[in-house]
Image (cartoon, rainbow, N blue to C red; front, side, top):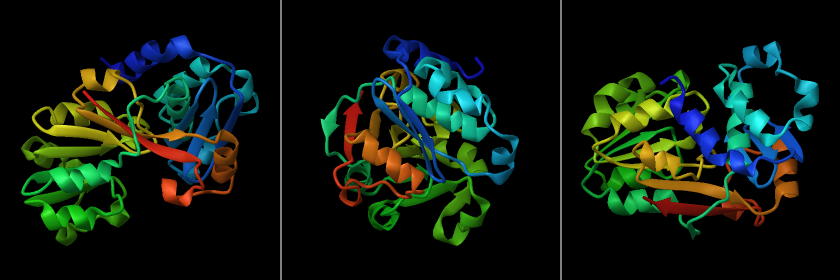
Length: 247
């Protein structure tokens, strides 16, 4: 069962294996350009960067399927490359222009909402929800008085939620599979640029997938190299587009 979700995603996408056209690893994002374009959040831990990246000088010589195996690494920089490679083998389907946060604000009225990861506009969710709990991995962002709890509160808060919204970046740190299991009684959304837009996640309990399709790969590669932060379509000159699909 170890990393079964990752294995299932790789098996489901390997038919779209291709040579790797380009890779970028930035402070905030990793991008892999193969048959399609895949993004992943990077965890810029200096200690991990010091360990280096396996075969770093030969990454563009590998296929996207070979790079996808990096998603199993506990070096989270390598894992970011691997998740981006998985995403580069997935053709984005679904409704265009759908922002998952709009959906959460609309459907979260008088509901218990749990969000894994700190996102913009959560004050709008708090204003309508019966209860909003934000689970955050980064200790410096934890603020219990503001409803921001450490990720270790997941076991207590998620099973009681009506709506669960999980950052796709949890694929990188290997927590997504367990979070989906905890949220089996909630309406569960996996969202953000790292989200694999694959039906495999529906098999694991997701009800909605809301990711981003990269429309201009060259421009996105340059943005990553410049250390680009929050990726929002209105700020990215037509480089990306929200896309969402339901089970």
